[in-house]
Structure formats: C-alpha cells, structure tokens
Length: 171
Image (spheres, helix red, strand yellow):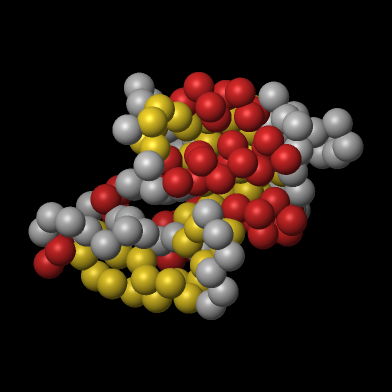
C-alpha cells in the first residue's frame, strides 16, 4: 500500500512530444474554482467530477467554454482500473467536499449512496488526449490514482514518472 505524503492536492506535469494541444486535467474539479486559471494555460481543460450537482454547476458557470470545446466536463467516478458500468459513490448530505468513492468509515448516515458511471484514468486519456498537467484532489483515493498515473507514465517514458514516485511513500 502507498500513501501520498506532504500534499493534499497532487499536481503532475506530464509532457507529450506527440501532441500539439495542451490539455489540463482537473480531477476532482469540485465547483470549478481552479478552471479559470487552467483555461488561461491550456487549449483544453477536462474537468472530472463525480458529484452530478457540481457538474451541473460547472456547466452553468462556464457555458461559453463548454460550448466552444475548451472545457469538457466529465461526470464520472474516476477509477484506477477499468470498471465498466456504474459504481457506488457517496455524496455527503451537507458538505459536498467530503463526497467520496470509497465507502465512508465514519458517520455513514451523513452520506447518500448513488450509482454513477465509472471511467478509468486510461480511458480518460484515450478519450481526450495525453495530459500536459494533471491535478488530482479526490477524497481518500488520490494515492490510488497517483499510483496508476506513475505506472501509466512509466510506460510512456514520461518525466512525470519521477514526480509520481517522489510523491509516493511506502507505508
């Protein structure tokens, strides 16, 4: 098992020499507060958020960017491996920031379980292109996606592999 140490949000620069568009992935986009900055730095921003209400909010907040294709909103639960179909997701009833993919360990009565579409990191990259930069901020699952990103970028011979390894520490 691995854990992320010293960071709450993992930001990974991934450089692709075979792709012209600069694509930034905002994994765990929440209400979209980081999106304006990313739009200044990228040709395309892919905002990944599991909470359907927050996805709706992002689309309403950035209608022009969504319409012109500069912002793609993916309403799905991002997984390290191919899942296929829907997976459980736990939406916190009073604080959307606490919503999570993993079953809640404390105060489960504060969460509403719903089924949402799942998509793997690999599928996300196949659908939208290799990232220039990835921000990962998802409750309790960051380390799993970070591990998968390290494995994926290792296969791509990317400098991101080193960044991922530095952020991971064996328990």
